[in-house]
Length: 359
Image (cartoon, rainbow, N blue to C red; front, side):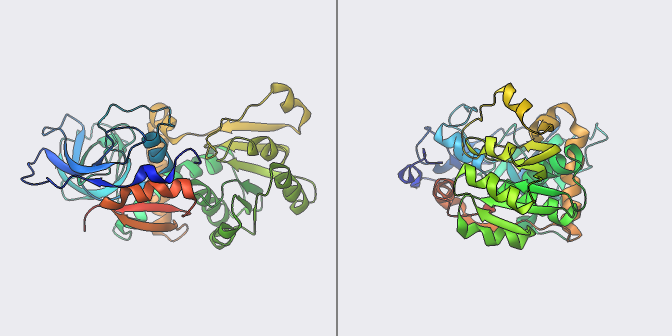
């Protein structure tokens, strides 16, 4: 995120926080795009609507999408003031859940829950309101930190690799942006659940060891788009890979397409480069025949809530069983939120960055 300068995330704190009423919550608030978030009392609804719950937030993951929204680079343009954060864990403190849908869980006050609150947001706060469609019980074996690190990226990778690509044992797969949150999730799912042979491509050499530790049998730095294809073809004896999982886009995308073998599959799951790839249809005809598949967990939430919910439940279960394990890069406090967001422009971290909101 070269467009986000280091100085826009210095924290401004409102020191007049006192006499907090129940309909206010301490939160990190975006008041002006491209300016630091401000820590202050933020008004939230004091009455829940049908199907909503109120959560006392324990941790909230900080994601690339949060940084893009705050910097004005996202297609999402929130109404300001706005509290970012959608990947949340905490305790239910009030509920108007209807439990009308068979896909939803019977969640009660006092339960430990994971929430993917992409519609309402509000996770960078001590309390937030969530929709029952997006709430999942946390197995007792999992900590809050583990649960908040696994929902969004792992469910996306699971749908892309297991459901759409039908990745099988001993298939070869290239994962681009392999040291990012989504990339590491794809490596973990591919190597440790699907038992595939994973090639991890990273932007920086320093992150290649993390990718190998997660299960990749080869991991290397992408020195140029051309070098990516040459290295993958060398490692596959010129055949190319069965599956490409691309979360980069931009100039890497055409080279990633050159890495896929005959009748392979390319999963498009994100654009970490902030550049949408341009693809001429004629280019598809000069390559080996392959399938191009887009995957968005949010779209599954809209069009197939059953698959959306089951995928999140499945990754929680697999984590409980020890099949997969998320990588937590750093845990910061709420008043360090701007430092956390800055990590996405400086490549300081790989894996998940968490905000600890409360004990």
